[in-house]
Amino acid sequence: MQFERLDIADVVLLKPKKFGDARGYFMETFRRNLFEEMVGPYQFVQDNQSLSADVGTIRGLHFQLEPRAQGKLVSCIAGAILDVAVDIRSGSPTYGRHVAAELTAENGHMLWVPPGFAHAFCTLVADTKVSYKVTDYYSPEHDRGLAFDDPDIGIEWPMPTGQAVLSGKDKQQPKLRDLGTAFTFSSAAS
Ligand SMILES: Cc1cn([C@H]2C[C@H](O)[C@@H](COP(=O)(O)OP(=O)(O)O[C@H]3O[C@H](C)C(=O)[C@H](O)[C@H]3O)O2)c(=O)[nH]c1=O
Image (cartoon, helix red, strand yellow):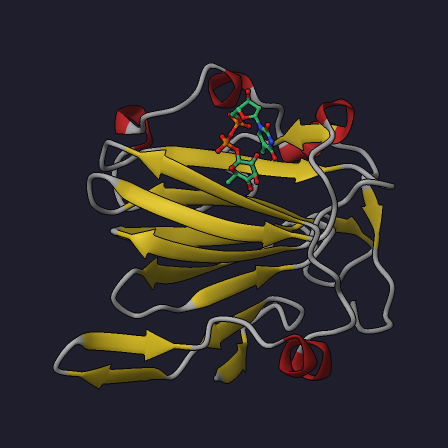
């Protein structure tokens, strides 16, 4: 497994080793000791899975407020996504900036999105399945979002935003400028 820190260092791209043979492939997708050594002492408590039928489905930008903030380890188990993490930690030198990675069932890559980041993805093919582990339980009271097409964040989605397939909730998310202080940045490793 390779761990690659992205331009926002707290966001990590994990690249499992694939062992291919005539039957197909095998790969280890998670090892607690390695994750704790390379990323941090996070504990996962819930696994999620979503299926998006249409190309250009955008889910997010979503996050949970403290004290129910979630770290997410995101993988694509069918199809392909552009996965995006936005730094929303007040005081962070990269506040409002984002990083993105292409996660596909083929490459097996996974993205670690720490607490303090908003998360979204866009599907690149039909019938895309995303599977992800989270470090705190779902809490509707703490569930929040930001506009996926917020010009102050400036995510370059792979298709015109007017063509995005969205939930009703994601069609009317607030802008980053209206967020206030949701998280505060700690210079200690997140
Ligand atoms: C997230 C979640 C949702 N739900 C229920 C609530 C709704 O009735 C239904 C769909 O929820 P939502 O529209 O928020 O699902 P997504 O748009 O896929 O949102 C997720 O996708 C983006 C990319 C994220 O980063 C979050 O993990 C998550 O918000 O599932 C649950 O019961 N448990 C959960 O953990």
